[in-house]
Amino acid sequence: MAVTHKLIQTVSVTAATVSSIDFNSIPQTYTDLVLVVSMRTNAAGVSDYVAISFNSSTASFTFKPVYGDGTSALSANYTTSPSSRIISGAVGNTATANVFSSGTTYIPNYTSSNNKSYSSDYAREQNATGTELGFGAGIWANTAAITSISLTSWNGSSIMQYSSASLYGIKNS
Image 1: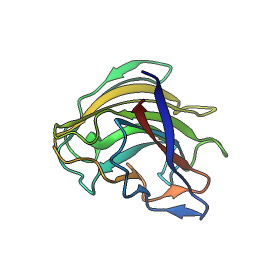
Image 2: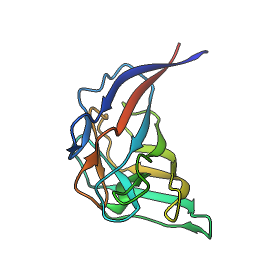
Image 3: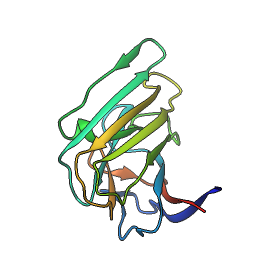
Image 4: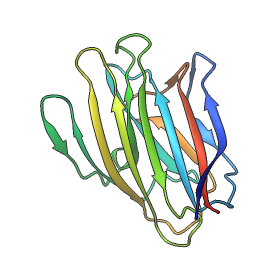
């Protein structure tokens, strides 16, 4: 079976800032979803993270990342919001100008009646301190099909201009 990726939607931040990037009315016709993010936020400092919510829910998330910052390798177990909803690193407002993070999140079986697992990998670029590479696995302990996704800043209040996110559907056909 060939696996096909179909672009569902790309959201690009064209205003100075937005509070979130949202994907609504996600079609229920695919097997899996892939979310690709490039983000910079207004968080103080050089580093931030991208937080996710499904169907407007911010509860029942767990995320376990492994990451490195060029000096040390670390791991964590995030079980309370908003840390539990992290999916990617993001560049904060005082980072090198015109630098953005990049991350990919894979969400299998998003229409099933089981809890929803996902995996992420990301790179937070920076020409000085604050660089981070990581990957992790998460779960949303909810059996509802995912019909909407919202992305927000973990430490800040806004997502900066020129950030973007693309949502793809994957279908075995």
